[in-house]
Every structure is written in structure tokens, then in C-alpha cells.
Length: 424
Image 1: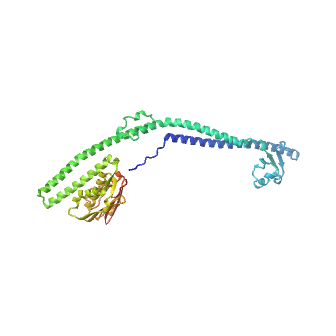
Image 2: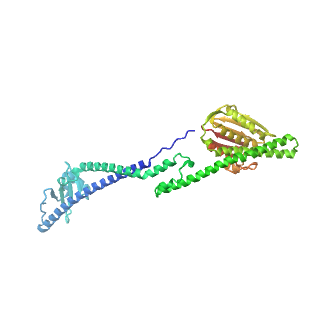
Image 3: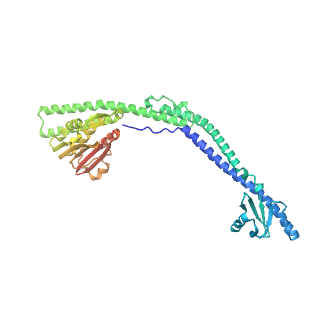
């Protein structure tokens, strides 16, 4: 049976990747803030210089009634927007609130509206005053190199921190990975630090101890059941055979003996199934190609006592002459349970066994499953009115199918059809 191993994700590797990713994000945000700050400072110096010049011009105008010539050669007064430099004129008209403009030939302008004179504008061509924009590529290059260096340093620090942090957890994982609970070293939790890893180690140690105790109890139980139940069942069956051979049974006693034999047979089958489910070696046993028909025929013979006195035809389809990749013992137990149920609850008609597309199908013409319990028929202690058992038959079959990774389907109407998809 193929089982895929889940992909392993290293915790220390994730710590390193997340630490590096965090560093890259921080560097990117810091670089963006640096750019914004540099541009803001540059514009602040330019605006301060323009404001000082504008204040000097306004004072001169107020003193003489005429606008003086700006002292700085890169600044000039304009007395309407139509007279502004051609490369910014239309844009200044379309966007009256805009103060900063890019002109042709890499010229850069700042527009200042004079106080108390809305139609007078001070225009400063500040291309030679810019100190951030000309070195923008160099700044980007410097910030990129700095981010790369910081990321490498962060990865190194994350590697050292991650290895130191994860080392106890890795040791704990290696200790419990694939190790049987009974082979776990005793009192291993005391070797771990008194932190979250220590709490995890103590929790695992307690859990492993309880699991080991439970396994020991289960082994003792299955060993005792195998002996203590099978022996009295054999005694009951032998006693019934001796009583029948004596020929002294009345009709009433014969019916009683038949009921005892039927109950003993059902109990033996149930015990065999439960023991198989309780033993872990059956789950890990190697699957083999086996012939299905001999197992079907043997199961019919072993459950034939349930057909005595009934008008039932047992039909085995020719497609049962097939090979199945499964554990022979588990398949035999499954067939005994399915045929036992079909033979027991069918009073007349037929029971059909077939094998189609890896699906073993047992169909009977019995009374079917009560509609009130049809949705819960595979749950424990659920049984119909005609049942004389305890309602664990299909529940055990379901557990057996889950144990072997088989798919169980139950359909009931005029009779009952139980199919099991045997997946190898």
C-alpha cells in the first residue's frame, strides 16, 4: 500500500527566510523614507530662498511703488501668466495651484505668487540649485548596495540565532521521530531548557508514557482474550456436538442448542475480527496476490450452518475467479462477517457474491435495513428490529475496512447490498 511521506519544512530555514524578508522590507521602507526626506529638504531650501527673495521684492514695491529687479540671477518677475516662460506657461494656466514645474532641456522651475499682487509671479529656475535629483541614480545604487549588505548580515545573524534556537527542538524531534513509544528513553524531558521546548518535551514524555502503558494493556488484553475466550467457545462447540451425537435432544432442546451454537459461532467470528483489528502487525503486513474464489468458497462453508432450514440459494459470480492484492487473513475475516450477516438475516431468496472493478459485492434478498437507522447502520450498537445481536456487525466491518484502507458502501432497499472497494 503506497503511502507518501509529507514534505519536511526546516524550521531554522523558515526563520532565516522570514528574517531576511523582514530585513529587505525594512530596507525598502527606509530607502523610500530617505528619498522622500531628501526631496522634501531640497524643496524646503529652495522654497525658503524664494520666499526670502519675494519678501525683499514686496518690501521694495511697498517703499517705491515699483517692483524692483530680483537680486538673484535665476529669479525673474512676471506680471501675467501669459508672459511666463513658454515651456511652463500652459501648464501654469491649467493648474493654477501648482508651484513646481519641469521645463525643457532639464530646466526646473518654482512658481511663487506675490503677496497682495495676484497677477505678479516670481519664477525661479533652480536647475543649478538641485542637489538630490542629479545624484538620484547614485543614491539608488548606494541604497541597493546597503540593503544587500544588511540582508547578508541579517541572514548570517538569523542563521546563528535559528540554529541555536531550533537545536533543542531538532534534538527532541530526532528523539521521537519513528521511535516506538516503549523505546523512548526514560526521563528525557529533564535534559531540555525550562521554556516552551521543555514544556513540549515534558508533554511528549507524559504522552509517550501513557501510550506505552496503553499498548501494554492492549497486548495483555488481546493475549488474555485469545486464550480466555477461545477456550470456552471451543468447549461450547464441542459440548453441542456431543449433545447432538447422543440423539437424546427433544425438538425444543434442539432449537435451544441451535441458538447456542449460532451465538457461539457469532461470538467466535467477532472475537477473531476484534483480535485482528487490535494487532498492529496486520496493518503493516505485506500485501500479496491471492485467489479470491477459494476464500469465498471457504467463507460460505464456514457460515453454512446459518443456512440450515432456510430456502436460500447462494450464487457466486464467475468474476470471483480473480486475483486480489490483499492480506489473506483480513480478507477472510471480512468475507466471514459479510456472509455471516447476509445468511443470518435472509430467510428466503438468494445471496449473491460478485467481484467487479476491484469491488467485492455481497447482495441478499433479506428484509433490508430499517429506514430509521439506515444512515447510522455502521455506527456501534445500531441494529434493526429483526436483529438478534448487539448491533456491532457492520460497525466491526467498517473498522476492518478503515484498518485496511478499503472503501465500504452499504445500500438497502428490497434486500441489502454491501460493497467493499479493495484498494491495493
